[in-house]
Length: 289
Ligand code: FE2
Image (tube, rainbow, N blue to C red; front, top):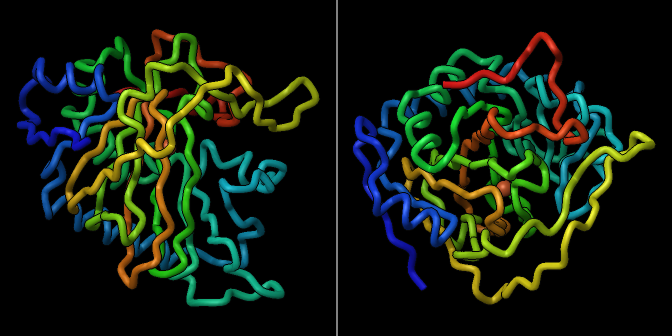
């Protein structure tokens, strides 16, 4: 199946066609959402963050295919900080295997609060209108990530639902995924199961009573993995993901990078689950648009 593609004048409210498509498919693809100037500002800011990054401070290798990072304090504490995560295989005997600009998997998870450039971009009023138009009463920005998907070594992200990681009752999380560079099948674009958001939540990643981070089944869901469609996204595209939509991304086997920025927004009218992995200091309440 091919999904509809929208262009949206961000001065307007999302129209009925967009809302219906989101309710039906669990995903909206909005082309040309980020103009070239705004995109370049973000890319330049990412370059500066990478320049300032000291690899010696990193002691974890992030991989969602294994949950080995779960026990790592560096990850646990990153909910209200700006931290740098490496690709698997980036370190050999404690040394970087490539220049630091080529080994980063992602930066997260509070760029939207702590970095002025990302704060300004993430709080553009259009995103608030979009979140409200898609059903959130009181949207709040909880998580942000720069995802590098490096040429040749960018790892895959396995099939998941964002509500697994950012749970509210009722489920409310919406993912905004911005293509800062062209994303297609060869450099690790997103894939999703359109309509799969209606089948419920499969699992939760949360703290248990012992203080361990665990992946816990919620309900068995029979996903038709063959039905996944590539969400090809030219630079500047915004992909909006329902929190229950199963999605993944492939490895980057191409010589091209696939830089993206993601922002996750929950409805503050829903109840935030205190056992979520993502913790924020009391001095950093979740802010809206
Ligand atoms: Fe996701």
